[in-house]
Image (cartoon, each protein chain N blue to C red):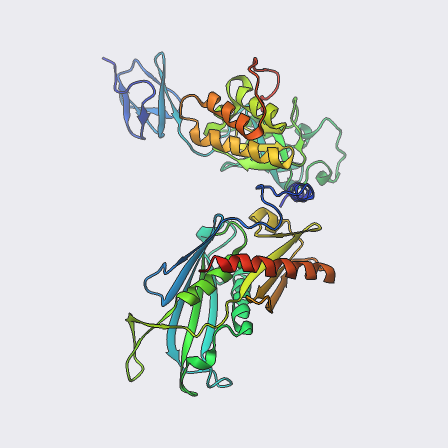
Length: 258
Length: 243
């Protein structure tokens, strides 16, 4: 990141604009497409500007964890494909991929969006396991928000497969039962560039930022998860502003889900 | 007996036979195979007398001596800097070509150019091994401060600059931005946030519509619509905009 570009981004923000002409709190065009893959139980694609993320949900019957014998399992995995950005390499998941998966996971888990008790088939023996796979198709900034929105959309899209009496799954036939999804936590990441707070950054703005705060919130503006990133600390005043902005923007994103 | 197999300004593909016989001469983008002249690039054929050459439709930058380019410093060497020219081979800027100042032995070279800096520079030599030497000695060669860098197709650069810089000076005067376009397809824009965006969009428009006739008139109308300012017809200045 050239220091000049960072200075230029901040100077432009001081004049009330961004390099691509947006306002500081303005998203690019957001599009949600449901059922993009045939083999997953639920899937969705989210496009924010040129950023593109696909999420697939697979369901399987597994044994529960010993400490939660009557709860279903939830797993989130993110893969940043090398084709989606020059900064991504093949190989084991990078720190960035792990962070995206964990942040998305936390939003769903802590909001208790999925009633995992309802995923129990037989206590301590058989429960439904929800496996969420996040795949980046193109990274033009803001993978966090795109991944989180696509995950909620994919969960809404998910239908249970047909199960025989001896708990054999027939993945070819889908039933009409949806996941027990009671809430829709939406994550919005607010980035701090200089003294300015912006949403939906481009890769240049991400590289030039000092810090970021991801906030997951529900439709009644209740907060359920947070993640701070970046090298510099945030003041409590800034955190307040970031959370306000994130909850406000989450409502806009939520309207795209219908 | 020599015979031309194509017409002037035809689009040809690599391997296509352009002419037979020894009367025609192969130039850029063509080669002689036996008594035939064949294309080795995808592009428009240009017939200049007996010389056949191909103007590629797109591609990466191939460094050429004398080109003024915008490069990014990527490494500091023992006695100079290595710069990225937006092509496969990097260039070396030696100490003696970097400034007119005397640089003391063991001086801190980041004082002059830092990693990540963009510089307007001139290619002084390209060897057969593709070792490239660049120099900062010459009018208008300097380090760029501020503004934004965009990348364009190097083969569209002549269209973005226009005849004697007419196109780029039209963008400059109508948007009040400072614009420089390097031969390597790296462009620099600096101005007010809104006009910078108009200038960038204008360059993108030229890039995508350069093959359609009447480009200058369309760009004039486009810029007038976007800026709300009338562009006066005037003789293109030849002193600036070389870059």
